[in-house]
Image: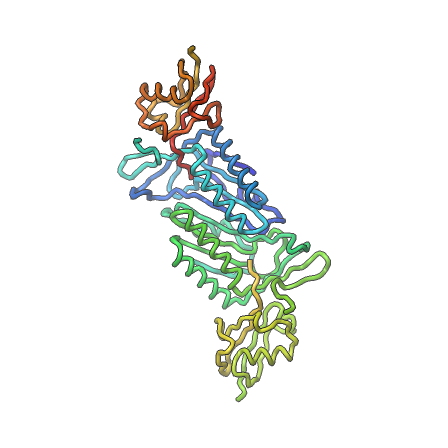
Length: 139
Length: 139
Length: 81
Length: 81
């Protein structure tokens, strides 16, 4: 079980290997990719900023909840920080389990919770030169 | 979009790359692994046998249904045939989509349908020297 | 009238038939009648209700009309994944 | 009584404050009062209702009692993934 904020590129093949277990029949992974378009605007790149200590603490809590609530063997999540280009891997979640239902449910639980609870912020840089922090409406 | 029965080992990293798309924000994969225990018996290895022509035809129908019913970009499924050892990758499903909900739903749909509709059969070889075709009850 | 049907076997049916394929001269009108004949010959343990049928590489009903040179496969319960 | 609080800023708050961290001498009893003061100083656009608070690297309520040397972070709406 491992939650990490990484300033370096994520290697999904290497992370997947950490989940291998001959008692496991299923492995589900989620990858979040940087895409070129969001809410009607053309995106050129992103920057992620994290409150590292609390992000790891809250991320580990989410993984513990998943281990407690779903019948899984192992679970891992790595989230990028820093500047990312189009197509880059922003977040990776992987789960191994005896059966696929629990693996799907736990994987989805983790990414849903990470997106709403872990203190990470995303700034988008647009084609028109503008930029902005996502969700940080003027209030 | 691609469905394949493969007598050779599946390379998940290579398959994942075929789904890359800068309009996609999410990628979900499912892997089925050969595990050492099923229905109370210790398994040593498996053999998969496929009715190749119909398996590919039915597999492609399932992928088309997923493309029609979920808002996804690309989808791929490869299933092994032949003898597999513990820990080997038996089936891989990958989906890319703009958003994660559709990617999760489509991935799960495909593996659920593949397991019940595609003409592939699994023989388990047990520790005690016995073996048997799964689901082929004496009737 | 006798016709020639190519039958292919997979999994438990292949093992019980002792062969992966055979060419059958038969008067069976449809896959249901054909399975009945072959079941008697080979001692298949699976009931028709447990099987599906493919004719010429696609799923077909048990009462599909068989023609000369058709290829028939009886499909045991699948177990992929 | 004045206490010394270490404040760290992230994302839009960091940009609006013009700094990633500052040390504040304050009489604020709790993070709610502290944000009010800092909002006036830096012109933060986010309402308290849009923020969460962390004290000493864990989530805390707005009315948590602040002690000397505490570390405080105001957490804008997150947007991971």
